[in-house]
Image (cartoon, rainbow, N blue to C red; front, side, top):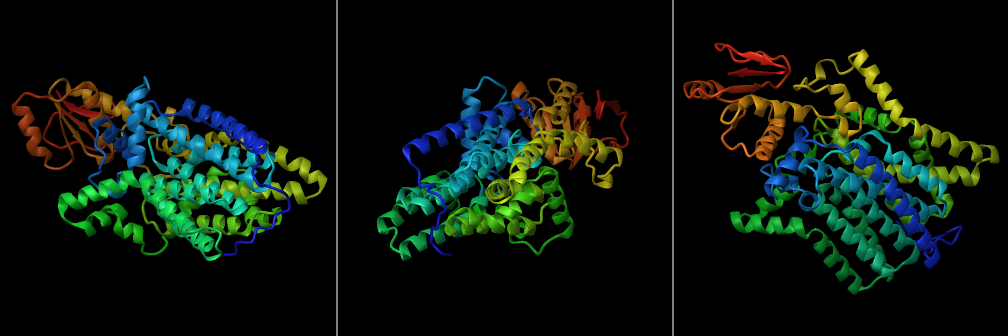
Amino acid sequence: MSTTTSTSRDLTPTTGRASHALLGWAVVLAAALLLYAATAARVIQWQDSGSHVLRIVQGEVTNPLGLALAHPLFYWLGRAFVGILPVEPAHAVSLVSALAGAVAVANVFGLVRQLCGRVAPAVLAAASLAVAHTFWQFSTIPESYTLAAALLTAEMWCLVLWAQTRRPVWLVTMFLASGLGLANHNLALLTLPVVATVLLLALWYRQAGWRTLLACVVGWLVGASSLLVLVVQEAIGTGDVSGAIHSMLFGRYESHVKGEGISLRLAAISVAFTVLSFPNLTLLAAVLGAVRGGRLGVPRLAMYALLAALGIHLLFVLRYSVVDQYTFLVPAYALIAVLAGLGYAYMLDHWSSAWRRAIPVAAGLMIVVTPLWYVVATATARHYDVLGAQKRDKPYRDDYAYLLLPWGVAETSAERMSSQALDLAGERGLVIVEDGMGMFAVQYQRLMRDADEVDLIGGDDVEARIAEARRANRPVVLVPARRGDTPPAGYDWRREGDLYVLP
């Protein structure tokens, strides 16, 4: 990796240029935040989103599945938003994702503008990311991925500024962002080799000294401190240092993290969601940016680092054999958008005048109509039953809308299910939730209603618990794992919507 910085234009920050860049960043931030806040989920959600909200509301910073799933930075931001905002806690935590997503979009704008000195490509890159399906979706529900993208783009922006200016402050800030990224999500470890290489090159070429090295280490430790404190606490509490570190790195998902090769089926799903997310010129522009970005005067150090960071992310995700593999591409989408911005800049700099006039208009129009594409794709997939046997059919949930429409505000099935379950249970009933990914929503509703007398159990050992509840004359509510599943035989169940009840 060379540290040569041949530039065709002066991109070194000046006071005037920096103020204009900051204004542009703020405008893009405000626009993206308006979009995400308006479409953010207002109520409790299924799966990990529900778990995040429940832990935040209950004040549980750790996760029973391991420290790798604690996401303490997201947790503490969620606690702050819940304490400050006058909205339902589930809505407040969704707004953490909305703000993080908006910051990531604004950072993409700032990165592209910093790299090529042009506003139009930066706007196109930021806009393409803002409306990208999966990025938009995770900017509207309680998840840590958009915060990972915000910190990754901040990290890369600092790297670019170092490559252009050789000011040590950017190295230190880069490591601070990397540490904060780890405190949010282990995905931040993927780019640690990249930034560490940049620092080692700086030391090798004597562009930074040992004081800078020490400051970088301290910055990283400070950024990661909210996670490292949990590791130390667990190590002291259990007396098992290696176990605490293992919990931080893998949780209960070691086999998935290490991977056993690439699953073609999961890879195909990830590719499909990527195409769904960028049904415009973004992917083509990103390929062009990756190949020709160096001709824009982008420092080779910055170009190689961006490509390395994206390559590492893509390789890890494709080897990460979990059913929702595509969701881990959210930070990578931000890097794709940056490369797309370079591609657009190359078009405007090197293509004919006719193309220079047509490309921004065509790209902009395709981005504007992208939300319509999601509506059409959802209706088409539902019409042809594309999911087939893969549908989960959770109570009240339309799997096509759940997966393919990115605005979380429309997804209320978990809230509807959990609210009805508590309504039917009354003050002291028993609620059986067969699907563990739906349990978080019911637990949240019980907490919000202060309904401690209502018992919640999973799908195990239900016969004995039902018999016990019947003897005590308590209502029993069954939340089936799949809509229409047959309830346990031997009882006079009454169907209430998608749920069942023994009054």
